[in-house]
Figure 1 (cartoon, rainbow, N blue to C red):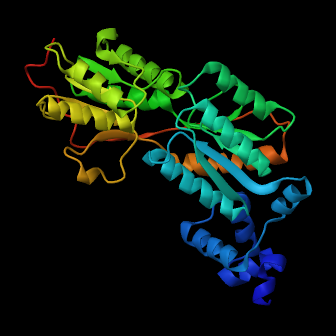
Figure 2: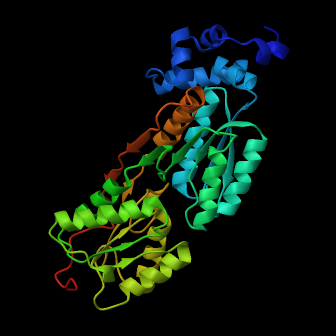
Figure 3: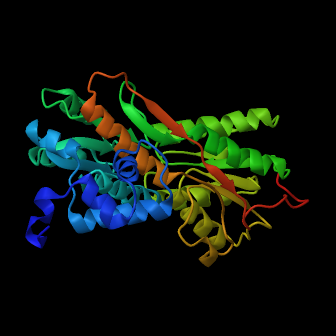
Length: 350
């Protein structure tokens, strides 16, 4: 085919021929209907790029008056979890002939609403949304109403769950349980917890997991060891200083997200506390380069890549079947034990 005609006439057969795979393999890659090895998937995606192949589903979307676009709104793409998720979503969308439009809400429902309206104005076929949870509740409800309104934008929630909507998230309860149970198994009895706003389902669920693990270990919940409503890094830093700067400080802490983990490690250094000798740390969310940190942090890593890919799959299925019952996928995290956690010193505060 002529180079100028590629984007108009490329077919599954063209892609299969260029990638030296079967048409079935191309179809499975595009539609996610069967396992395709990473090597074959990479070949197919490269061939799709080179031929400009557009799946039939995109043509159907265009006939319905929407564009082959998927809106993706996260709280902050500088957070490694969301950056990894966004990259995986972009790869999955591109394999199916869609383009991702992305925005950062900064946890502000008003900003989120502007992105929702802009993406709808671009005739996006669907939305993937980490709904803002640190702002005004009425504004959040209004944003959900916009999505449910006459425009009826198929939407999948990520990281945060909303009743009645498709969602893909990590197992936040299980992740906090795993981090807390790990510290309890090491012998810690005074285990603190620092998190962001409990307006987010993420933090409520992680607090629940922390409390469950304490109960399972025979430890009582002590509200004096818990600091919540820390909406950004400096608030988390101040909260960590407050929690760790007393004689009755905990010997270990569970930290609900990567920003809180960084802030707490800073606060511990400022107070002259060594980790893990004086303070064991277990965070939720992993770091891109943990080997550059001292100590390397023990974490429960979240399945960000899989969440991004599954969100694209669900939103495309929702576009095709709008009346199907809502689905909630909850994916497990993975405890990674590194240098920041160890048994408590003999002089653990009581």
